[in-house]
Image (cartoon, rainbow, N blue to C red; front, side, top):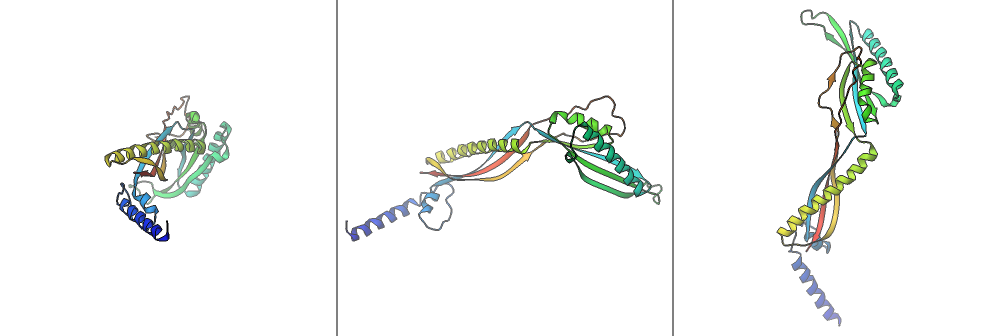
Amino acid sequence: MDRRLTVIVGVTLLVALAGCSGLAGSTGGAGSGTGDQATLDESIDVAANGEATASPDRATIRVAVTASGSDAQSVRDDLAADEDSLRAGLTEWGLSEDAIQTVRYDVSETYASRENPNRTQFEGVHQYEIELDNVDAVGEVIDVAIGSGADEVQQIQFGLSEEREAAVREEALQNAMTNARADADVLANASDLTIEGVHAVSTGGSGVSPYRVAETAALDGGDAGDASTGIETGDVSVQVSVNVVYDVQ
């Protein structure tokens, strides 16, 4: 084949490709005009969500000690004494100091009553978060906290360790890909196209929904008695999204 014939064949192929580029799939976008544009035009782009659940393997308990008095120093002293008692009780039970973290400390002045607005008092609160790897021990730890000086149980939340969350997220991604392929099959069938494979895939947003006890429990200070607190757990869910581009013809 001489050079002239080669040029004619090349032009013919370009014309044929230009004709094929008009057969766009569902999401062909504006491109740079290169050879890759034909591939992207013959595609289906799908966004899909996936979810997976698992039983929790960690828990967070938020408790608080409170105090009130006629001056700020006495309130701080009471909060400090309650902190010593609370930490001693929890560490004696078996928790490490690192598992007991302060999340809020506040001492403020407030009016004692509307009848006597000139008389003021001070109120203080010290909130703690207690981290547990043994979710079955949540009720027992609550009993220990209350017996050691905590006045309120403000929140109970169940979640996942990093290892378990990674495994559940992988399952959620697989579910998302299954959902994406199902949507792509419907779109392809409706468009008289055939899916040839995956051209590109990426992840979108993701999130974890911990299980929270529905209502916080405000407890009076003092002896908790012989009753044992029972807390029921629920599954934790992980949600992800994916974007998948499928080659079609």
